[in-house]
Amino acid sequence: MGLLELLRKLKASPSHEIRVLLLGLDNAGKTTILKSLAGEEVSKVTPTQGFNIKSVKQEKWNLNVWDIGGQRNIRPYWRNYFENTDVLIYVIDSADRKRLDETGLELTELLEEEKLQGVPLLIFANKQDLLSAAPPGEIADSLGLNDIRTRTWQIQACSAMSGEGLEHGMNWVLKTCSKPK
Amino acid sequence: MILRLWWYLYYGCLHRMLKWVLRRTTGKCELERICSGYPSGAERTKAVENCLKHSRIVALKKIVTAENLNAVEAVNNIIALKSVYINRNQSFRPDLLQCLQQIGGYQKLVNQVRSLQKEKYSATEEDHEKQLMKLWNLMKPETTLERRKTKQWGQLGFQGDDPATDFRGMGILGLQNLIFFAENYNSIASKVLSQSLHPKFGYSYAVVGINLTSLIFDLLCKKYLKYHFYNTVSGEPALYHFHRVYCYVFCEFNNFWLTEEPESIMEFSRILDKYREKLIERLREPQASLQNNLLGE
Image 1 (cartoon, rainbow over the protein chains, first blue to last red):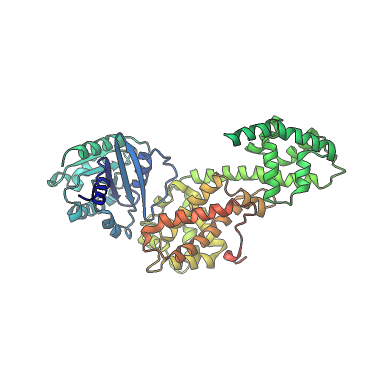
Image 2: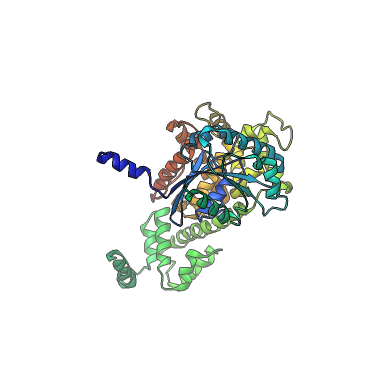
């Protein structure tokens, strides 16, 4: 093995790097979750044009979290970010019952993508602080999560504004990533 | 470390000694020397601000951070405290008053803008709904809105069929900026909107507009707009002046975006960051002034 090749190999496998892809419809709360994970203020979030990325240190892990805009005309670009994803986090506005079908369709399409085959899936059932929020069980049914056989998945109720539930979800991410593949 | 020591030494004693000597020789206090020594604008107001900040008199120190400064009263207090001979220096009072109005006005503006940012858009609030409709009518006078919630909002660059969710963290401030632009520079706003629909270099007008509100709100809170206001507003800067900065920035960013020829909308964050850096660089100059022919003035 040449020196260059050895260096490249070392660089390619920093064992504690995790690439997390944050997707979901517009107004689901992806950027608020990203900011909350990074310990930043969440009261001044604006709609994402394009994408945001942040590195979040958690224990020995370095999570590179990609938050891609959820607006309809941005969704076609989602696929540009699939490569090498370790975990897919799909965020749902639990209070937006009218769009539960739409978000379900987008998720089904995502799960059929070849580059995301076998990638573990965490669903954040966000905005649980709102009275009108659907409980995670109802969302899981609506999305047909129980039919998923080809990957590990988890649904976690949360409120990105208060931070509640996020830690639980992220612990699941770390636990899943530390299992030998 | 050495710099800090020098700073301490300078303001702790050297500065005071110098001031004492100058006071004896010129017969003027430092504020008087500043007002007659600098032309009106950011250089003078900044020097006054700095002088007050380092004053040994608590009442003077407080002027710089006062939430609701009464500039006239503050000028009278300074003249009395420093025993200034007003008859000998007629221009001192109006000059100092202008500086204090600018300093106090900036702080008031920050508070006013903050409260608008904190006011969440609410669809049950009649006034908010009225404002939203006003925006539509100003930008799309020829098209009637079919319903309150409709895909038509996409024509203005909102994300979904209800703009309410897009205002988010910027609240009513985001909406009022968009309205001000549409109302006062209608033809320019329409031109920017049509350019935002470019098939290759397009972007979502309203969403980008809300992100630009976030940009200048942040600059205002971090005091980057001080020099601009000190140079361009002779009294207290008002909400109106903040809105005008917004219009200027929207036009300029639009031009910047187009000259960058982005691959796609996914380049937005990168290009916005780049624009922000350039803007800050200019705002740091003592002669900063966001005014030129962009708005046809």
